[in-house]
Image 1 (cartoon, rainbow, N blue to C red):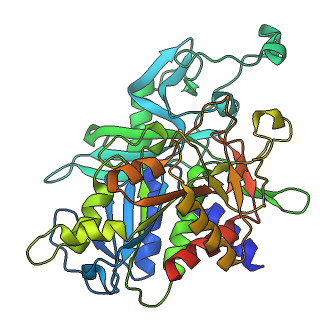
Image 2: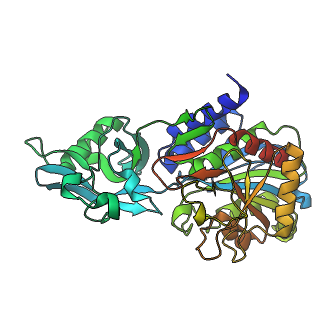
Image 3: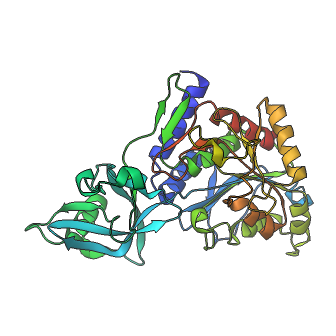
Length: 432
């Protein structure tokens, strides 16, 4: 197996093991621990060593890891790559279980900009975390059902004759609740759900205090295309960005006067305004703790920000061959054409002239081609954690990502030849 194939297989395995942000952070924690990183707690005092490797989590769904620079206290600054752990999906409501017309169903909320039609007629299951009673305080437990427990069946074409001409129209409240089982003598939907959960995590149903569960597609990621040039998987946006940054950090060797950092946030898909989102002080808190001197002066922190650089790593839009008119004619990134620098004059992306040129220089050093994306002037533009981080920290930032199709679908599509080059550029960033 080639280096590229090993890398893609590792990416797909990582995504398959990460159906929710809780699982993604748990996987990252395990990988970092294996690489000699020590876990810190925000509530405890930190005694950090020069060139020491550490990580800290918040809400079990966001994570920051770093290698302490040899001159952090001299305001040498930080090299930071940020990404997000969440993806658009369907989440169970608190009182989700109900019976209807002989079926047991689960009520769901739409999380983020979901491409809803792609969630129909798929083999779905549940994953997330469960809060249970503990001896002293509630405990959090990860849960994932591997078997397909759920399905959102489409209406037969015989009862919806215009669907191919007018498109599938879904009412989020009425048409998205998945079928869980048939109603019968074995109890209500709530009882069945709690029974399955308690059996899975080995507790009593009465011990369950709350559920934070999401639907996910049980089909694993795969390599496809006539020459194996594509990858097909859920949650490429943006676990691929997390994986590339994680690989770059763990592969970077040697001492560096600057502190190398990866920051993976939850809740990017819904605006980042949460205690563990990019809009929170999570990253700022960590960086400030790394620069405090014996007098607790913030002078070193402010100077460090001026000497720092942030790469916002999030997937980019490749040109769609069937809808090429939706793209600006001179900004059409292609899959397997290299990482994309994303620009927007209205600051939906944080890229500016200096940061763009700087990233292009990195790509040249890594021997990687680079592309650029600007949305059509008559279309709205999405955003990332880049502008949020730049405005919070006053740090020079560039927005980049690998090109993909089917963004926000339950099953997305990207290039098998793009992932390793992105890791090389990120590694160059951490070693430059």
